[in-house]
Length: 386
Image 1 (cartoon, rainbow, N blue to C red):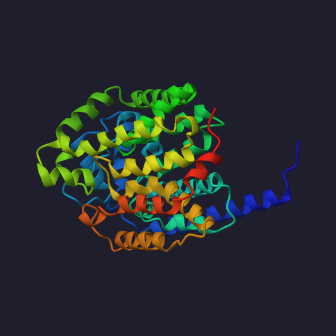
Image 2 (cartoon, rainbow, N blue to C red; image 1 turned 30 degrees about the vertical axis):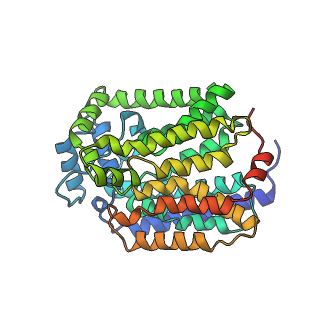
Image 3 (tube, rainbow, N blue to C red; image 1 turned 90 degrees about the vertical axis):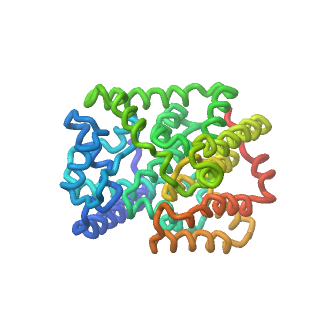
């Protein structure tokens, strides 16, 4: 057996010790926290019902469980997850609310840390500590503070970028969490489907199908009526009548609040653009170049979504930072954008505020600024997938 280099072993021990230290700090800081005060409570309540073979979308039962855990609002918080994605937080069904909050926050921190390491690796392992700025990325930090699941969308996307060439099956399986909020990835999903068909990369589709099937089977083993219960919840909740600060929904509310179809117009137009964008670059397509722009456009034109969902944009924001640093372009614009967003998140500005409308366009503007002039060279140097 080949011996592990001492330097590698020492680095692994340092990383493990650091993670244990951070986990201990998280546990101590959250010990006195009311679990019902975090968005985490909706995931925990749903899983508590599921493992007891009850309806995870039951209004009355969810409210009772949340109130018993310290929830103080007058209306239950639901996890509007399709049944296939309930497996993402299944371990929460086997622990109490306080222990669950600690474990969930540690898992989110681990997901963010792994994402940052993979992004650094995907960008050629630059000799800089700029990657650590990702821990202060306002949408991701909001997820950590609130216990929101969006960090796992970030990790899913980064895992896809990391594995789509070397292990396409696992790259497809990694995308399963993105089905929880598919509306965040519409132009990206359209281009991905076209890319798989043109390049005949059906193993990615097979991996996704396998993960989807596993999620369904696991959920149905606890609740065989999960899909019908989910459908009933979505019919009666009226989510699209609630204002969410996105450009698409603001457009609809400004023109005709009752015309729900209006908020899907930007997304449809973005999908049409994505078809053109992919087709004109299909022979030199590279997900670390073209895919990041698609991701930013997807976020800009999403029909529904919150500020913390922009966590998934971290690969594009950091890629722009690395490219700007390499070309000796000023990082001041990113500092201003990220700084204002961080202040907004920490004050905190209410999540439904119109003041969050500017962030998605700002991340896109930063990326275009950071990569302008070197896009052509990047495309030439990128090796297209076989």
